[in-house]
Image (cartoon, rainbow, N blue to C red; front, side, top):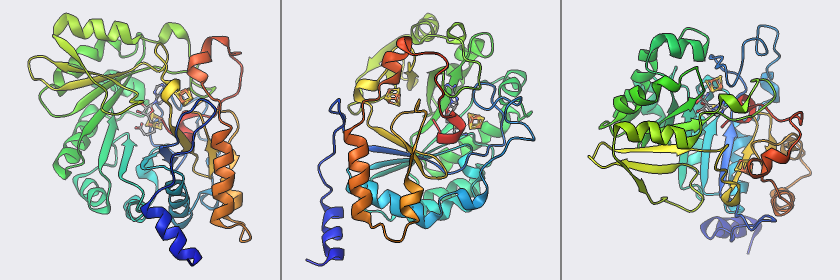
Length: 352
Ligand code: SAM
Ligand code: SF4
Ligand code: SF4
């Protein structure tokens, strides 16, 4: 068989999933396509750190679309079938729909999703993304009241702009549409009920996320975390909810259904109920650093291999296999035993 035919054969019949030291398969790849963002969410890119003098990556540092497609093809051969595009704000990357089209050409990828703040998600953009092969979208929105939302995004963006983005996603058929709400004590915790009420009966799944200690810049304190149990009991005071079985092993959100048919919500309890035991995700930063954990401090430089003309795909496959099979990460499970000062990559750099 020629080299090309062999690799085609492998794409049709992906290799069995590779397992890490805790027997977790590699299935999901999250690609951060830019470290830039037009928001300065207080829990992610506080203005004091990400101000006018902050040095974002110059364009030449970013992986090109062809490099990203090659990377996804390689990961497909390692068992990855799901890709999520994130950032920074992914829609700040020029011609993102062209990238989505290129990535959706990779046979092994069955599911392609994106997480966005929604600011640039016009109806035209949503349709272009859908036509390019994007299947699902998650829009982040932390409040329904302008003054609270503006306090969170810290750049004065009104709620209406993001609600229009959610509508655009629904109309374009990027389903299921999910909305992510990070709940921070005394910032937006009073918005849990209004947000739930707003998205009931809309087909949108609202997901409440515990505020996490990602990166080193958001000044995270355990007191600011509104625990999943508290979010759930707040909701249960208002509505009758029943648990829904996970749709796949390792699903990060605990799902609940309104008994009156109002739809579903999810709660992502990354802090109080860590899901490291089933974590099948690998992450890549915009400049091609690979992280086997959201809380990693050092990435593996894949770009260097991608840009070395003496390195072929087989070598990269072997290198990434070695990286995953040596993986032991379980940061959230072990969080309490860690030194708080341990340096970590920023969320806005590798995405959520
Ligand atoms: N800019 C896009 C957005 O906001 O949707 C994509 C990147 S953002 C880093 C991905 C997700 O991470 C968002 O839903 C955001 O709310 C969430 N996030 C950011 N910082 C967080 C934190 N400290 N704790 C929990 N979630 C966080
Ligand atoms: Fe930007 Fe998303 Fe971070 Fe907010 S959460 S600052 S929108 S990257
Ligand atoms: Fe996965 Fe790391 Fe998060 Fe645990 S802490 S679920 S290993 S990304």
